[in-house]
Amino acid sequence: MKSTLNKLGVAIALATGMASAQAAYIESGDASNFLASAQLATDMTIQGTIGQGDEGDVFKLVFGSAGILTIQAASSQIDTNIGLFDAGFNALAGDDDSGGGLNSLLSYAISAGTYYIGIGDYAMYAVNASNQSWFLDGLAPAGFGAVSNIENQTSISTGGYTLSLSLQNNAVPEPATLGLLGLGLLGMGMMRRKTA
Image (cartoon, rainbow, N blue to C red; front, top):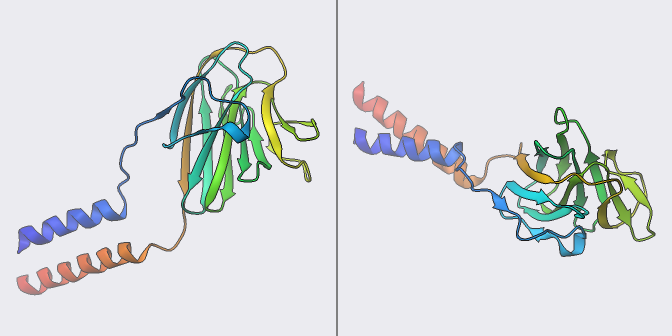
């Protein structure tokens, strides 16, 4: 009985808090700088390269829950510049150097759904349907509208980068998680009663 309860305790710990390690999504070929043809990233770590003449890379991500999305871009070769866009291609926020040194870091409250993340070398701009440009740093200007693409408007340094994403979810635990926790507490109570 004690062995079964120990196994149940391990299962509960795994189900309630330990995240599994994920492999990185590797850029396939040269990712497009147009939001409509973004590569679908399947992991919370994305690795890619900005090459000569590369206007930037855009990745599509789908999140199943709401929370605070944090995006950190790191590179030892380029001055990263990142942007976040919603499912309608509207610019939400961007960052140039908040990640320390030439790295980028931004956090933004999102709902469940589809988002796009753009990355490039300094200086990256979002370009809307009217061909207006916005430098990807801070919150997007009100009424900027849907973005068609991102593009580098200065000389481009080349090199690899890593995008690290995390989603802080402060939601109420799912019923299944609460059920497992309840089973664990019940088992601990039974074990305590047997030893008393």
